[in-house]
Structure formats: C-alpha cells, structure tokens
Image (cartoon, rainbow, N blue to C red; front, side, top):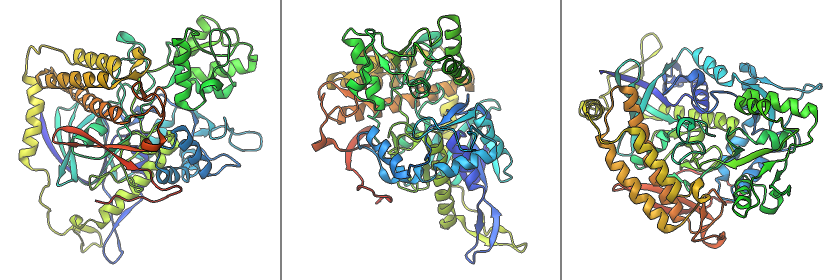
Length: 587
C-alpha cells in the first residue's frame, strides 16, 4: 500500500443523507480573520465506504418523507409524538431542534430536484399526520449531485475509515484505506462529523444464508461510527432501545404503506384485530404480533382483502418503487385485494434515526470527544428522525463544526498579501509517523497471515447466532434474561479474541474483518445496556424477562455508557427538563 497524508479543515465520515447535507451546509461558509474579513473557502472532505451516489439508507430511494410538519400541526406536536412512541426516554432539546427544521430542509430538497407530490391546489399530498408523498427513487443522486457541484468539497469514494485519531480526548483526524487504489490514508482535520449510520447484522436475520442481505436496514451499515467512538471513550446512550421493524414476511418489505396508505389493520389467523389490544406504538405493533404467534393465534396479517381496485393499483406501484420483490410476489401469487399480507418482526438493529441509540450529544451535536460531531442514525437521544431529521442534524452538526473550526486557536490563519488567508506557519502534524506505522502494520498482518482457523464469515455467523440465542433475537421472541446476557457477553468476547488471527487476500477482505470487529464492539455495548435497564419499557425492543413490567420510579432515565479499561461501564442520567431546548456538555 501507498501511504497518503491529507490535511483538511472539516472531515465528514460517511456520505449518506446526513453526511451529504452536512457538506452542503458547511460549504456555504468562509473562514474569517479577527477583523471579520472574508477569506478562503473552508476545505471539506467527505470519505465514503461506497459511492455517495447510491450509498446509505436512501440508496434505493424512498416514497415518502415521514417527518414533516403538516398543515395544522406544530413542531411541538412532533416532539410529543416521538416522546410518546419512545415512552419518554428522549432528548426533547434534540427533537425540537430537528422538528423546527423539517419543512425548511424539505423545501431545499425540492429546489435541488426532488419531486414532491401535490394536489390540485398545489399543496403537498400528505400520508397521515406527519408524512408527505414523494417520488424519491433518485433522492440520493440528487444529494450527491449537489455535493459534486461544490468547489470546496472533495469526495473520497471506496475508502474505509476504521479508526479515529484522538489525543487527550480531542479528535484530530482518522485513518482509512482505499479499497480500489491500495492506499492507506492518514487524514488530519480541525473538526470531524461522524455520519456513518447505525448497525445491522448484529443478530441472525429473518432470512439467513444466501438471502441474509434481505433485511430492513442496509447490510453495509456495521456500526463503524459507534465502534470508533466507543473505543476512544465517547459517551453513548440508550443502546438497549433496539429497533425491530414490522415487515411483510419473507420479502421484508415495508408495512407502513399498507397501514397508512390503505388503512390495513393488524389481524390474527382468526380474523381478529389485535393492534388495539397491545397498543399502536412502533414497539407494541411488533410485540402484539409476537404475542399472538406465541399464543397460537398466528400467523398474523395486515388485512387487505376487499380493498378497491384503485387502492390495489396504488400499492402495486408503490412497492414496485421501494420493494419490488413484494410486487413480484403479489403478481406471482395473490394480489392484496384477494389475500391478506402476512407480517413478521425483523431482527433487532441499533439505529438512532428510529430509536434513541447512539452518541450522547449536546444540542450542537457535539459528542463528548472534543471536535467530533454526530449526525443522522449515529447520533442518539433523538428518535423518529427519518430522512428530514437526518438532513436537519447534518445541518446542525455542520454549522457547529464550522463554528468550532473558526474559534479554534489551532487554525492559526493570517491574512496574506492577496487578501486571502494563508497559514502563518506550518503546524506540526498531529498524526505522528509511529501511529501511522502501527495502523499500517495491523492491516499488513491480516494480509500476511495464512491458513486462519476460521473465516471472517464464520465468525460473523457465530456472532449472530450468539446474539439471537442469548441477547433477545428472533428465536427467543426478542426476550432475554440476565443469565442469557452473561453467556452472550462471554461468547462475544471469545469471538472477538479470534479476530486478530483472521487472514485476508486483499483490502476488500480486510474491510470485512474491520466490519466484523465493529459489529462485535457494538454487540458488547448492546449487551451491557440491556443488562442495565431492569424493566421492560419497550416490549420487544427490550423485553427483559427478569423484569417484565415498566418501572417509572427507578428507570425513567437514560442509560449511558463509556469504555473504561477495556470494559463497557454503564451509568444513568436524569431526563432533560420538560420542554428544555438547550443542553451542553459539562466536561
């Protein structure tokens, strides 16, 4: 491998929804001297593991924006909805800050070229109280093209970032390697935004083996951003609030379009509507389905028999756009007007866009590592973000990071004779040669080792089996006990100890090794958080069989964690004050 050093002002790790919008926001800023004179454009670098044109959760498109303040509603209404769905364990300050931006970022998306459906009066077509319909199959290329037009933004595609560079709890860059160009990158930056998304693939999926990629959350999201932060001592929050999606059986296609689009109710095999029995929050919809199956009244369905021809055609088109396998299945078997749609829960995921899992951040999206900001699914405390929430957080994180860069004494800018800014004197490199050599040697070790006893895929399957059996996966109806979690921790530690002996034939396989290690780190955090919360607040999401009831006296609080001497140490924090709109870290 070649070694390449890069220096930038702002490093954005992850070119998904939040990462792209962070770059778009930051690119509008210029550096200034003490007198306020304008200077050089901020240098921004996006590093993406895939290609930003089709990376992240929006890679295949989306048919609605699920977070929008529709006519007659206010941001406060959205905060209350998210707060109720998460049974109170949210950061109201974070929710307010994104909900107040939903409509602005939507309008900006439309200007960039997104097609938003409108009625005869020119108003957005709504789907429920908080959603609007779009033609979003090209939403990610739209964002990527907007980034491409920015002169002060550089994009490194197919580069896998695998570690931060942190000194004295201050980030100064990151390490990565190019999958296609055999290059090791040491990237120095004055501030970093982490926007790598959540974590899939921790648990055995609905469809193991050949079809394991057919899951709710992108299989390429490994929890890399979480793992890097955890290893460097960042404070994390609410990993016990896992997300389990209710999906169409086998195809794992979305169910929201059925429930909201045609008003399909959840029914058991006897034809009884059971959703009102268990509740209609996100976790309760999954829990009710699991319970009905366990009690012998399954399979469970969304009742679509008898819908109109117009509704059926609408469903066929909608699913052809976002989940073609479901439309194909209908056409090969029975269409939704003739047969109800069988449903099931997915394996658990860790994703801060639907639940509150992720980095513990302040209102500016600053993490507890100085200079590191989090946006999108990787940021915690703020569930029900969806697309517009990720955009809003990208904007907030970008503005905060730029503000930090401008205020940083390390910038040391001086006005040159051409009225542009130049560095007064070269700053000493913060990433030392010895650190580069250590990371480089680790990669080389995987490439040089031969005849590994296990393959990366075998260890990944072992990890998924352990999490499924002992940490509340599909097999156990998402339930777990303290004894089971202890077994899970022990076995995950054993699997992790085997990763150092893995071998790879090229950098693509080296990336798979790092992805496995990232997932294992996140698994350990999930296990620690599940074991700490001695209640069942979110059925299925955190079904603690030792403590099957909710406990508002002792557990109406956040469960947070840090890595201390190699162990995940959990602790609690009190909820932010009712209606509070501002929180800053007290270092």
